[in-house]
Image (cartoon, rainbow, N blue to C red; front, side, top):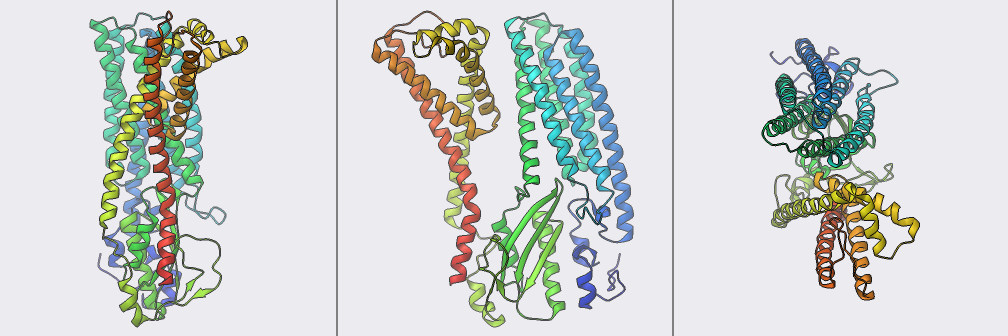
Length: 549
C-alpha cells in the first residue's frame, strides 16, 4: 500500500495538532509498516490500516479455532488416560493425565484471554481485561499443587507397597498421549512464533509430549523387567516437572501484578538505546510493565533541544518505533521536555520537582554526545563479568543437582521406615521423648522437599538456606555425641545397627563436605540475587555522575 500523507483525522502529518491527537501507532508511515506490532493484536487496539485490521481478524479467528481444537484433544486424552490408568493400575499414567488436565486449564486460560482481549478497553478499564488471564493462572497453580500432593502421596505408598502394573496398557495409553500431544504442538507452533500467549501453550504441549514419551518408556520396560519401582519414580519426576512449571507461572503472574519490568527489558539498555537516537539529549524516569503476558507498556521522559513541535513529534515517533523493534514494547508513553526535571535519575523517585538546565543544541552535539556511552559497546570488564556469570551458573547447577540427589536419597529410606528412623533419632539422646516421633515424621519429608526444590531449581534461596541449616544440625549432633563418647548410628542414609567411632568420624567428614557445598550454593544464589538488585542502582549512579559532569 503506498504511503499517504494524511492522518486519520483528515489532516496532514505535518500538522502538529493532528500528530498529537493520533497515537504513535495510528500514524500511517513507512516505519509503522516496517515494524509491525509485535504483540500480534493490532485489531484489538485499532492499530494500522483497515485492510490490515481485516487480515488480523481472520488470523485471530484461525488462532481461536486452533486453540479450540487443541483444547478438545487435551480434554479427551487425559479422560482416556484416567480410565486406562485405573485399569492398568499405573500412577505414572494417572499423574500424566493430571498434568494434561492442567494443560487443558492452561489452554482454557489462553482461549479466555483471547476472547476477552477482543472486547477492547472501556472508559473504566482503560487497558482492557487482559489481566484476567493472570488471575486464572493463579487459580490454575493452586489446583495443580493440590493434584501434585495427591500424586506424591500415592507414589510414596507405591514405593512402600508395590503393585503389579500392566505394561501393555501403559504403552497403549502413552502412545495415545504422544500422538495427541504431538499433534497439539504442531497446531500451535505457527502462532507461537509471534504471540507469547500461544507460545506458552505450545511449550505446555511440548512438555506433555516429553512426559508421554517417558511413560511410554516405562511401559516398554515393564514388558521385560518387573521393575514396579519405576512407575512411582516416573510419577515423582512428572510431579517435579509440574511443580517447576507452576513455579514459573507463579513468578510471572506475581511479576505482572506487581508491575515489574519484563525480564527481557533491561532498563539500562533501553536508556542507552533512546539516548543514541538523533535529537535526544537525555532519557530518565523510565518505567516498563506488563499490561498482560503478551503486551508491554512503557513510559519515560525524553529531553530534546528547544525546537518546533512537529520536529519533537518526529523524535517521539522514532523513539516509539525503536522501543517496539528492539524490546517488543507495544504501548509507549513518551513525555518530551526541553529541561531535565528532577535529578534526571534512571528510575522515578517521585514527582518531578524543579528543573536542571541541559546543554544547548550546539553543546549537545559536541561535549554532550561524547560523554554518552554507546548502546552497542561492551567494555572489557563487562565481557569478563559475563564469563564469570556463566561459570557461576554452571557451578550452581552442579552443586544444586548433587545436593538434591543426596537429600532425596537420604529421605527415601526414612520415609519408608519412619519407626526405625525414630529409634535412630532417640539414640542421639538430644531430644525429649515427646519430640522424637514428630522429628522422625517431619524431617524426612523436609529433606525430600529440599531435594525436589534443588533438583527442579525451585525457590533456590530458601532451598539452599534450609539445606545449610539441616546440615549444621546433623553435623553438630554427630560432633556432640563423638565428644561425649556415645557410639550412634548416623542414620543419614537409612537406619541400621550402631557403628564404630571411626565411622562416625567419616560421617562427620562427609557432612562437613556437604555443608561446604550447601554454603557455596547459598553464596552463589545470594550473589546472583544481589547483582540483579544492584543493576538499577548502578544505572542511577552512572546517571548521577554524568549529570555532575
